[in-house]
Image (tube, rainbow, N blue to C red; front, side, top):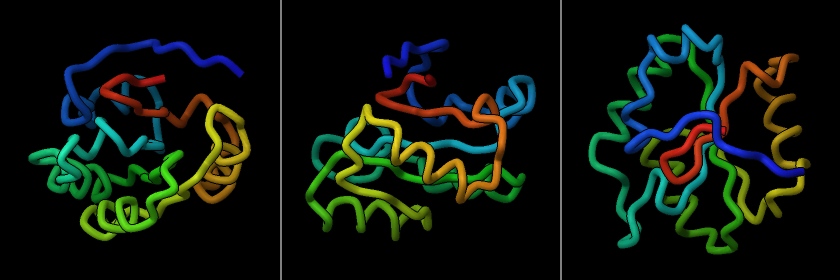
Length: 120
């Protein structure tokens, strides 16, 4: 399964509620490295507030990461209060389908995958 980006943005905080509504996006699957955490493993500045604001508006979040470093993904998960799947074996679709089921969103076009500041 090859996925190509539809939109390029500077960082995740550029994803606004208005943008999500315009594109009928109800859930976001977030990559970890260089997406919501920086190379020093700290959370992207402002990401927690961005995430909380969108959650208050009904947007669902999940972290899907290929990392096998459980402490790294757990730290981000706790800080953002977002569940996760690690060692996801992307690009295989198993993790994506599991999250879609958890989200209870039948139409996969209503879920955006965010990776390295790109929305797929």
